Length: 168
Image (cartoon, rainbow, N blue to C red; front, top):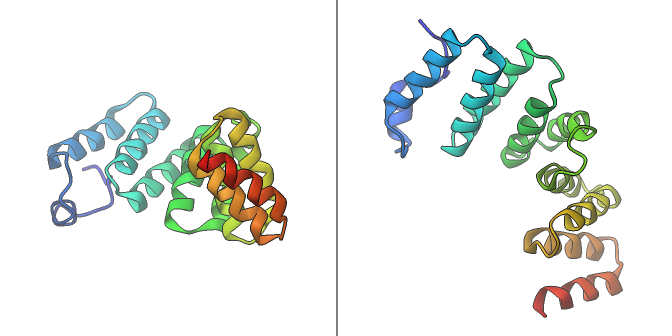
């Protein structure tokens, strides 16, 4: 019997998922039979996150990290989900570990910036927002968050310049 996903079938039904319950049993089967278990945990975590089961995705990524410690993709995906769950300190820890491998990745920089901003670490947040905007020029969410971060540290001219770009 597979112990994954760590939720009851009634929990899955109550959340009104788009995928049938049998898909989760398929994920469970993949985890128990796969020759590449870390890949199965990654696929399961990604699918659970896509379906909005963020806490269950965290568990899948953590199990993947147990099988493949310090694997950057698990660290990155876990960090992103932790930001979405509001666990900013742990998100920063995991995203920083993955950063070397994903330095030029928009999501890594954006979610690391979000975590820093939520922890009132505006200098680090600004650095990563600016880096994410160099990767994905003109991203509206990153631009707004960058403007807000500048505003919070009273750099009003930068705030105005970014806001003008947003509304141009």
